[in-house]
Image (tube, rainbow, N blue to C red; front, top):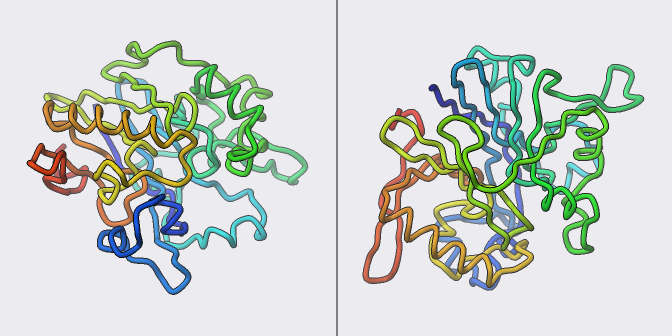
Length: 280
């Protein structure tokens, strides 16, 4: 098995929204904001090469949205999904499985692209099976008013129409050395992959733990639909991560790719940060 960091690009989000009720004077220590209160965030995916399977976890915001939409998110950086794949010797055609932790636009927007004459949509990964789960799919395709702006039909419905949609059932092993944890605080039935690599467990944290700045328990995103559920899920996960020495892969942390945590007299706290390549 080989693992590769896939940087799909960077964007900006309001710092207050990303940290909920926590005051700026506290969260800005790890995530300084600009004059508009915006903080830069990564959209970091993970590529798993295992035998004849090439599995991509999430795929960023994509490039099919119009300028009116994209200008709200201040996309920046000189990398994208396809240049990152190419860097490691792969193309979109090589991907066999696209695993979507959840269907918010910054996690699944790269799933679908315009066709050549921009008259309709087609799969960005034409040879891949796309994986979601029934509960989250129903949540995303009939969205509540709070999340509606994050579930874009053009990112989601074409997957089903093209016959590429597959559902995960339960938390059993999905692929070799690949299990999932379901979390419901951020959105319904978000999936958190746990990958066994040699003697290590690498956890793709998605929006359960967006950055090291979110390790203290009260630091919960304002975007979460059920913040108290997130609080419990995060506490359980972080305690387990400390006990079992998980390597946490951070999808949105602008400055840190991976981290470990440890138990202290103040609760679970950051132990170390590093790049994925440093532990492979």
